Length: 129
Image (tube, rainbow, N blue to C red; front, side, top):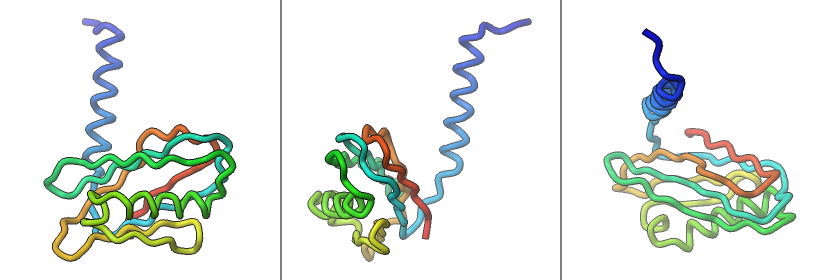
């Protein structure tokens, strides 16, 4: 019996999402590597999910022609200014283009994902530390 093509596409998407969810390994510290320069204005979306809690979504506006070091500072400053993030994590810029995000004492480990980004030319790579 042959299944409709739309069913196969939906099933494939579900398996991909399940694989991504299975790879979620919270950490107490993340390094977000920023590279490239902003070739357009837009926003960066970060999704931070403390273990056992709902995910928090952060939209960070980025101006056209922002350098990778300035993008890292913009991310750090936006997270520090948001009480949802500032109460849970410490943020700092490292090596100019990296943002270190560390959990505060008593907070759960967390997962960090880069969501939809509308800025052209910027690449973001989250790494567990």
